[in-house]
Image (tube, rainbow, N blue to C red; front, side, top):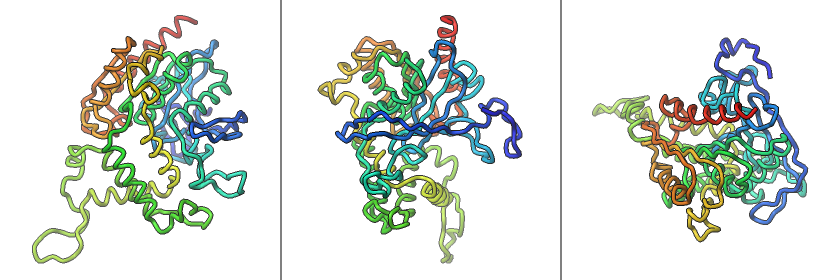
Length: 391
């Protein structure tokens, strides 16, 4: 990994620097929860820091719905850092000087790992809507195969926000001996009916686009830009808080005015912002992946196999837990994090719970916040000290 600067990166201090994504073809068959078996699959991933001599300092970062493997650092000729660059790097809460950090783009996504845009070997065409349905446990099993490829026997921690937190919890139940800590941020043990409703509206927006072509748009050289942009606009509203939107946009106008006698169209700043976010998203994300992953979210129920009893489910976990919530997050509200914490306590598990004040809504887990950064950093620093003392 090079730390040399380029014209676009005049200052890489505090960063993992310039990074390059890696790919691996996992030749071992992966049987999915739906019953379909992928004979092999490709995973795109990035790593930061170095493994210690005992391979005991590895942390897995689990991305959320639209995330990917580029969690930190910069690509050559790209000024935009990884999506969690504020939290991953030398001296940062997830310290690359002390940990070996792995972030993988999960199957079903669209950033290099096997998914709907990949070629279906049976047809020679992109999988499209024919890509098999997924569950969070499928992501965990795929991550475990990458773990074995990297010669890691046990994660020091599995860390994730939102859908990433669901993966961390699933890790603790499926492979309890394979992680020491689970960090569950702005997450839930299952979606509320309101969350499922928002996801269905977004999927309907995509499928209503004339260019969707029943999910086979790539075969017709089309992309459902309008539907995907609308889906993102719907989702984006739920990731923000009313307070933040009021502070940032209020009722400010982008174009026109509301004076009597004026007939020209009026555009509010919030309208312009959402249109921009939707259009930008539709240029790089895949519509079938969006449908697939939102259904994964809907399907997730941590305690389904335990008669819907989360206490019974968490009895199988052996790791320690850190649970974090944000006050203005109404998509994955603090009540959901308290449910996780209460179930863990009732199951007799070691859990720390931190409630963070923030007006940034669900997106708060991605953004700078001094108390959040300190809490996460202190927790992982203690873990790093324990690992270093054992060397």
